[in-house]
Image (cartoon, rainbow, N blue to C red; front, side, top):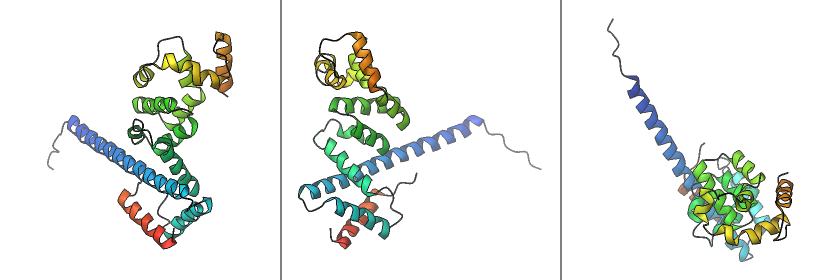
Length: 224
């Protein structure tokens, strides 16, 4: 019996690391394609609704038609189609934030654009998620605990993330959105601030071109 050749375990580890690196790159690229697809569909729906050629019933019909015609296409319920419209309309005029949304999964994006009330808050959480690699659950926990408001109103040094995205936020933001959001006057005690903050605390991805082609055909067949 021939003796097995001994290969250093480090070489095996290098192969595994290459596999994981490639998988991660593939996931990132697939996510970018999916976000771009959702953006394009949101733009289409927004324009159709604005021109009054589409209404709620048409979007529902489209969702049903997609499901019936090609059940393998997932993620295009009427609820998600309306989210795509909201997604596009939230960022369409903001060239600064548009590149950031491509780097986050759809779930993270829906949480941020649906729950954050200002451009500054959206930018904060978009940047924070990219930097800290938050899960969607952790992102929701941070929003539920009013992390953005706490950082803005804190007397301590602002976090590196917030200082990076908005250097002057400590001067011009505290007196506007946050105090109004918390129902506090401009002159307030630390106890009132704390009370107000506590009160607020209570894959398999299809190819983008393939889906776009299918949706185009579906829309033409449906006459919409």
